[in-house]
Image (cartoon, rainbow, N blue to C red; front, side, top):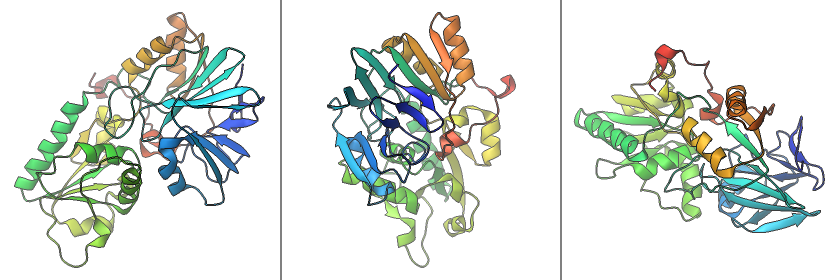
Length: 344
């Protein structure tokens, strides 16, 4: 094996580097710019070039960065490292390692299908695949993007006609920009929470087209918010910050919205099923396309996925992870849903 599991995370002893370590190390190979994967405090970072603006936004200035274009490789002590699109957020990458003909791939977080804000996932044939399993239950099946996008815009249109302001919650980096890209700007003005605006600016700086937005904090005094769409982080829900918008309709965009109990716990008016992770069918599709000899399953319903793969004749095992996600979508892992709560 090129990789081994350690308390600090996946480690390549030959190359002397970690992949998405959970604590500061000398050299970190980073799959994407969410802070549960890109830890602050490392001395050197190696990542995919499209993630540069997001990583620099979140890291300390003293860190030493090196970036590679997708498909470009670098050799560290004979281990060839390259990054390949993961389709999760802008700049997200699968990390491919090759040493003496053996190929091992760490997916990071990923999803299949097109996303206008990032490059689409690509299959990589490999001997070992380390895959996430955030939504690794058969109940998690995503709708086509055009269906969800149309539903969000219809909710916005109806709220505008009722004289309300919409507040749509999504993670500040990645999810919010994907939501913004699907909004129909003919319905009304779009406003952003400060954290969302900062992430959106990093997308613009990276060359990704975003609709016109106005930072909520830039508006002083009385303002008519009715008919507008506010894209905000989930932690803003129910806070005094919300009072300024007057009559509102609220919604959460997350893969967890596939389960009715999760929608109730969020106490929002609507729940839209939008995730930047693989659902159950696409997880199985990805493993089939990469056709690994071994699968290490981590981060989510890993025991369920590993057992299922073994029953299908693949060599799979659970990779214990000590990481704690601060991505709201990852962190909100609910208890296993009851059959009565599922929609699938």
